[in-house]
Image (cartoon, helix red, strand yellow):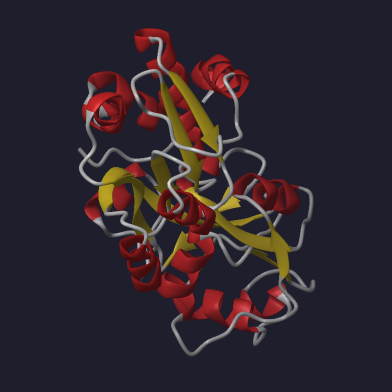
Amino acid sequence: MKLFKKMLYSAAVFGLVASADASAAGNKIVIDGSTTVGPIAKAFAAHFTKSTGVQVTVSESGSGNGAKSLINKSCDIADMSRPMKDNELEAAKSRGVNPVENVVALDGLAIIVHPSNRVNGLSKAQIRGIYMGRFTNWSQVGGPNAPIVIIQRESNSGTQDSFKELVMGKDNPISKRAETQASNGAIKTRVASTPNAVGFVGLGFIDNSVKALLVEGVEPDARTVKNGTYPLHRALFMYTNGQPAGVVKQFIDLPKSVEGKHMISEIGFVNYY
């Protein structure tokens, strides 16, 4: 991750807020969406601008807002940590937009706790029970006698949608006691500073400030995500309006390149290609 701090900073300098109209006519690419895909997009943006001279702006407003930006034609690429929903595809069609799914990387949805928490692993049923409010004390799942602080993402988050699909299921609502954070980074910071907290983040956000739990006895890492043995694995996407062409295609093809694969691995995600 350290290797890309300067690159990420450079991407931020080029601008994090998308313009009102997409403008990938050859000298600019506008990207909006997922905070999970954000670190990959920023690293790619810095590399792409340096190598081609094309300005790339990256905004991290959440997967749902990324979809809206693509539908409204205010971005060229929508970063998403989940597939587009049927209602989003219908809205796109009504606006003359044809969303095309491009896989950028693979990810594991990591369940994280404070490093001091003696719990090392949970089953999906235990995680679901915690988030439903059935388990309210860590002692109920093999931990200390302390109340569990539940952290979730906001409603427009692709990571939130993935968590609901992979862990909760359709008929199991998350407890109203859950605290909401606006990004992967915000969840990590909250858990790192709260000994009794539990949260979920993309694989690339794990560091020594938090502890990633085994799920069903399987550790979340590149190998288990790649081979599908980690239960909470998913794909990460970059959506375009129609098949990518020109500089947008060059950008979208980065995950297939040696440089792109190296960046994805260094940031902490898993190569798809």
